Image (cartoon, rainbow over all chains, first blue to last red; front, side, top):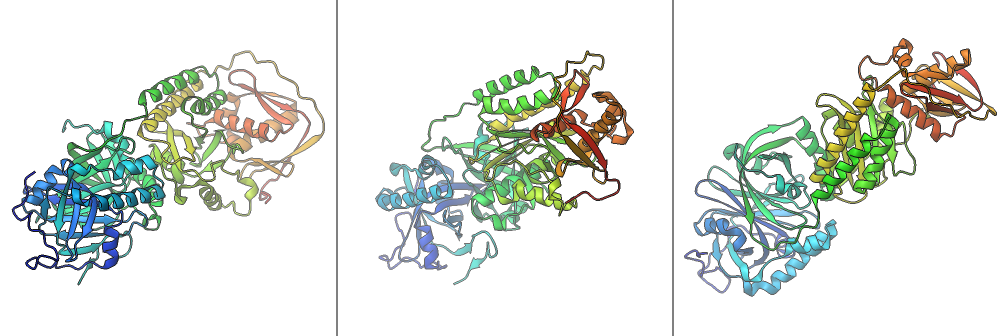
Length: 178
Length: 450
């Protein structure tokens, strides 16, 4: 999978040139994203076809960028759309109480690597498994859903521009403003 | 025709795992959410639930395209479906089936309080993609269901009358499918109510218990003439409450003695109801339930729908085979002792044995008619033909289900261990056997006792 030209320039707190993200995400939602959330991503082809994929974990950088890990083989077209500079959306759902939020950005970066994050992704996958079992899923089902191949990880780096609450009920779809 | 077929992926459409749904607006801005169910419509179409007017909805109306990722709960295989929005249905079998299923799923996912279904969005499948990733071997074998269905149909073919047929089908569900709790309800064309004529696996038989059309999975299956299946039960579809409400609406509040308790499980997690009858008419419902989640999938629905269909065909055949001339079978005399008073209330055709409620409606009117004639003439043998022709019973011209009512009456008398019994006396004939002195009181115009 080809990387975007800027893939090697991840924005982080150590990089003075990195832009700060336009949308600030409340700490409780950042905690949700990094603690066993079910993660789904979407982008769009140039022809307007929606693309969907499953994320396996998320790490938030100090400057507010989110690094969402995905399986490379499972998301070839989604990654191609991101590399081509198409818009991206990511939704995080807490399995325990179904609270959720969605971030959107006009573009994102893609890194064809993510193996260095495995200890943290393992921790998040364990939390996801436990949350699914609490919901009533069989342990083998939960383990299957949270499974990932550490040699097949890619990273989508997103600087959120807009944030929406998605928790079902009143307020669902409301945009968070800075 | 797209040539695509989603039949092999139906396990992924049961809502065990939430599916991922992505849409885009006209500018290519994506939106992604998790959805509780992708409903199978036919090999080339699926339906998604329309619950809120949100960004997904606006995108669908704008671009008519969606991408959905589904998960097989057994193998953990993921597939992506490229979908084209066709229309929204807000009534009918697909809508009702989704509504019932969504109620259960919403409860399972802890969001029952926001449950509602505004419509069933119908999509054509434009593409199916297998998502690479870790998978697990499949354990279940649909071929076993096919064999079980065949053996059940053979067993039904051996039944010579309706009572045997009804008992056979519920027993076969346990023997062949491992379904412990099941029942058959028949439809009363005059009232629309469904009344229970056979049950299996319950502590109390509940014979005679009624369900109103549209109530719970049974009532919805009958009203819509379509199978209804729930894998995560919820309060909205539990029958204890439904029966209570039904009784209240029928102005039976304060007359609880008239209501026979529905025999359903206290905490079912899976229920399935399948109409019995033809494409146009519903004669009854075959119902099964379990305490396990997701006990009945699409394959079980297919198998049980075939059983229900065969049951309906056998019922029709037995009706056609009625012969009035067959020699009566010998009666087993009852020892006579004591006395009992049958109290008949024309207001609702209810019959009480002493002070204990027995039956109401057409079955009550039949018993009253038999006992009245028995006391007047000493007659004990009757034919179904004379009952059909008796204007006092007010049986509907078509689909009167007389045999089912006689089965119901016979089982209620047997259950009460009453000194009164009804026995078969050959095809089209039956016998009233009294083991005690009978007295009959007709409470004309009076209200039934509380």
